[in-house]
Image (cartoon, rainbow, N blue to C red; front, side, top):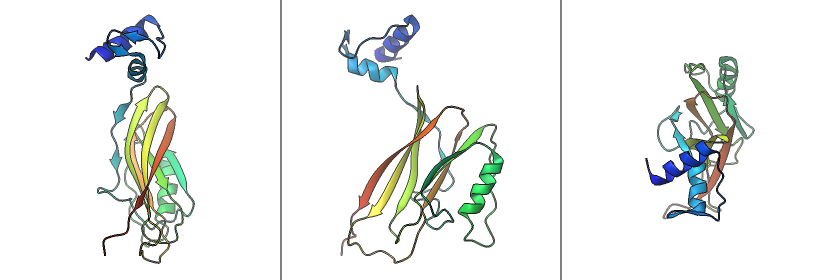
Length: 177
């Protein structure tokens, strides 16, 4: 255990709040504050491996971020995601006593080149934060002229804690010509 973790544990056990401007030994107050609210990684199992979305073509025409904690909601959303496809792929089994599913969707996009990926999740004192990367093509880049609806799905350990999504956007430069 690091000295930072020991100090945070001691302060918590004693019910002490140390202001961010204080110093504790060689540990500056702002470092101490971040140790108190440190994030712990949560295992994330995406439903598709690789560096791109679960699918670029889905039945989710609106942008959304959803946490599913039961099989009925899971089945309904799976059917919506796969509504463009006949036959629909089989519903992946999820044990909702153990896991929950997080979904992020961009909704309708005017062309190819858009993507969304669930990158990681962390738990902190206020709940679970799911990190999402949104990618869009740079202006003027040649992309396929087809409507897309990118969506990504991941399984996380079940929790009743609040879940929030933190997005970062990346613009993909045009490929070298």
